[in-house]
Amino acid sequence: MDLILENNAYHYELEKLCRLFYPEEPIRVMEDGTLPPNPAPLTAVARVEKTGNSVQLKASLSEGKAVLRAERAYEPGLFGDQNPERQLAELLYGLLVQKTGFTPRWGILTGIRPVKMLHSLIDRWGQDKALQIFMDAYHVSRQKTRLALLTLHKESSILAQKKPNGFSLYIGIPFCPSRCAYCSFVSMSVEKTMQLIPDYVTCLCREIRAAGRVAKGLGLVLQAVYMGGGTPTTLSAEQMDAVLAAVQDSFDLSACREVTVEAGRPDTVTPEKLRGLRRRGVTRISINPQTMQEKVLQAIGRRHTVQQVLDAFAMAREAEFDNINMDLIAGLPLDTPETFADTVDRVCALGPESITVHTLALKRASRIFQQGEQRASGAMVAQMLDYAGQKLLSGGWQPYYLYRQTRILGGLENVGFAKPGFEDFYNTVIMDESQTILACGAGAGSKICAPDGRLTRVYNFKYPYEYITRHKEILERKEKVEQIYETFAHT
Ligand code: SF4
Image 1: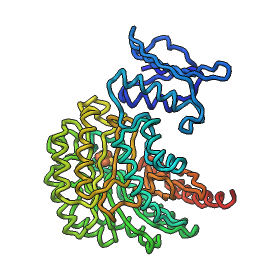
Image 2: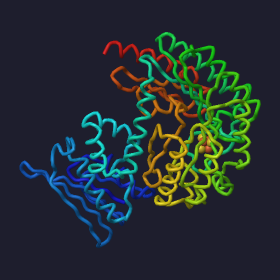
Image 3: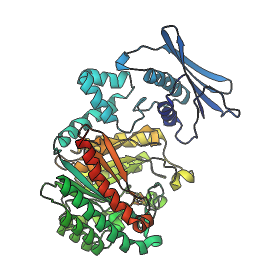
Image 4: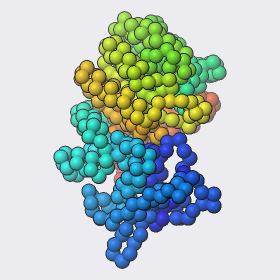
């Protein structure tokens, strides 16, 4: 698809809008208004025309001889618009809906944080008007508007627990037993990189201790710890114990309300590991079936069975975990609305304290994307999410964080649902980007949040090998965090 922009620089927003409708097509953007020498079969044009004091917005969508057109006068200040971007997007959106017959439930919103968007509208206009703008100006469906509002209320009550000098600690374990078909994460399959794990753990513990010194020096208060990946439980019980011991030795945990460890792959969970986690003060774990259908598990290369999910869950209860999350994905290959509903029912019947319902995102580096594997349509996925939402709400799980991803099927969303009191603080602050996160491990990125809300990011090396061999630089980057805080004090 070609997207031609004339007299405007709304490349970013308009390209993402086209991608909502054509998630798998390459989109070529011509910012100078010219047609490329070898035009794609489908061409979208978005034009801003200034004549005297008036501004006219024009959009067209053409495929061969079939052309759809729309235009309108730009109305400055309409719904708070400070430039023509939203109104031009709305114009093009109308043509894309007409052409494809597909109406995205989040309307013209392309950002990954629709709840944040609703929040800022409410701050500006008050709740009633903001909801109306969400639906009328951004074309968000009534159902998704309600979901965003429910999430916002829950999220606000969790964010109210942030402490002024609070922060969260993220620990990354980028290893997995095998690669899932939908994954583009830089996780190293254990078979190939087993020999890196001992050195990785040694370096990680060193970085955790360095982060502890930084936090102590700055007087920061640790509120949550999240060990994610990859699959942290790929490590042995001793290796996980060493990492958690480094956390306990390096930080004051007296104000820490949760310690989460992702035990994502049930085939990596053992009673010994779970008991070790409990002994080290882990309060929450995540056991992620993604699906409770054997054929779907096989299709996505998870290499574990439904029975292993059930066993891992029972083991976790046996080890006295009273806060368990389970992740599901809607839209996986071979799944249907009926089999997905069965998955939701079976997971609800287990009674985990939280359930996170993801929508499949077509990540470029994933096997699903690269091999063009068959998956559910956007309409089917919408049906799956509808079922999950109704079932979870009626079962007492409430939405508390929500985000979208690029190339997510149907332009839909990922939602964390939890029973009251079991919402994950870390997941909420990371979505809101309003608290410092110190991150340790390969591929991890610290986010340093200034008092005025500005974020500064400090990244670690992506790959475990680099992380180990250039570890001195990693430790130097931790010192940079102190310098960043000093600059806040002087600005
Ligand atoms: S468990 Fe998660 S990180 Fe690991 S391969 Fe699967 S999707 Fe990727």
